[in-house]
Length: 442
Image (cartoon, rainbow, N blue to C red; front, side):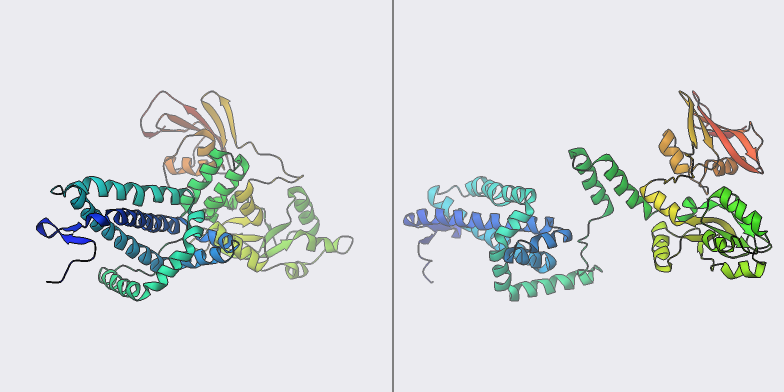
């Protein structure tokens, strides 16, 4: 049998005891191992807490920042190196502490569990991880050099381990090479809310960011001007009448159709029509020559996609069609920007009071009021369905063109048709009641 290592002697049951003269150096070794354990544990937390958006800030820190950015960008090999180092140190620390306990308290090996384990958890895991989580960039900058060196030193072992892990993941049907390092929407919303509560983000900024997130989920059908409200003219409209109508409605462009409104032949810009001011009125043929090609989009198109299309095409208007190709509305750049930053009024517009409180528990609502705006303003939620306006909800519930006075009860809310014009619900009154059936029509 070979001799035991210097400073160690075989103990009871094969355990390793220390030579009494080696207790002092061993205590120093325990401290060193604890320091390395803390370094690796904190590094794991710090690197994992960094986000891709931190890379540019890190590069501004010079060489150390570039090292951290490289470690964060190559996250899987970095974490593999950190975990290998951490396990190696922790196993070594456990063995050294066991020998120390057998030397200082012979016959009581169970003391290792009561001493080494809490020591490792407190100083080697919880404390460094908490510090690193509180200041991940500072920790990462401090350990960048030694961590990069360690990663390079064990690269053969690390690559072998990573290869084995990839084999296991492949067998389980998982993709190891596409880790999600991008903040999810709910995470960003949480950060924004925390910033709002801390006072670093004001109410207007918070609302704008919230609108930006909602914008990508919004469909064109919710933002468009519905077909009955679209201002359009037949190609045969006399010049003087066309100019007068454009002046009355104060619009910069309008669809021009031939025969039926579904047959839009082009979009007329008001400025192009003004070329004929003081001249002979244009003939239908000349008017057709002024028209721009209409741009059609499905009602299911997302608002952010349409905004990009407007930018690419350098246009401001889209005609919205349903799945059958029928015209259902019109969406403009102003509609999209209004959804992003709030409704914009120019000097020709008048503020629209779509929702008016007429009592402590009563409102008057325009039939064209968007359901989401209605719910936000009143705090009342309507059942989900294939409609976008309060008038559309009433049609869906009643199943016919109603007469004024017909009502729908939803929970403790009664909605009554107050105005109908040309087969459209123009006004609805709402009143909170004590109770009632979940849903009934009267």
